[in-house]
Length: 116
Length: 113
Image 1 (spheres, rainbow over the protein chains, first blue to last red):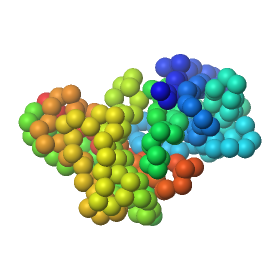
Image 2 (image 1 turned 180 degrees about the horizontal axis):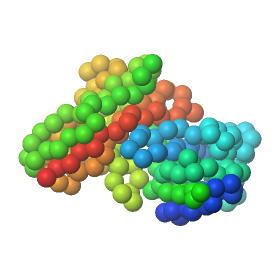
Image 3 (image 1 turned 180 degrees about the vertical axis):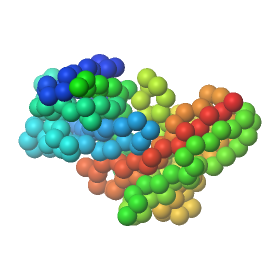
Image 4 (image 1 turned 90 degrees about the vertical axis):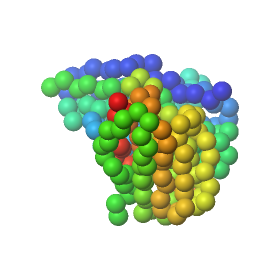
């Protein structure tokens, strides 16, 4: 079965420090991977995606993610955290058994708290 | 370009009442989706549509119905609301390419008492 795991419910980091939000996946075949961010009382916003090519993907707001096929991971990173980065982050993988539907399978989310 | 919009933003229902949530997108996307978000469970797909006039069941379809009479609109109905349907509901849309991301609406917070 296809799945996405976000092993940390919450990540705490001090402003200015680097941050990492972890994601691992389980799919058969080449994965299409996505990161979304949800600010309080808002919908999900697309951050970045990995489809193919360079393993380091750059996205919005200074975020980047590293695709690691051998570790089946797609961790989200930022060199210097801001208080405004505090939000709920979701990792997702394209449902490859879904046919022509572009369905996504989401992780349970990681709450990022950046302390001033 | 408003993207994906949802109405209403909030609603309180009594058990057994019915309601319809409306989703509209102005990006000419073929695919549309309804999710529910519950604490600790991420997003779960309720129903989806791959084009006007089509609908299909997702992961948690029981107690919900959908219709897509126009390409830009996707309606989610609750015929007889239950407290277990208290949740935040999100609509999303996507283009047809495999690399396409989904675009989300702002959500509807529904409470069933």
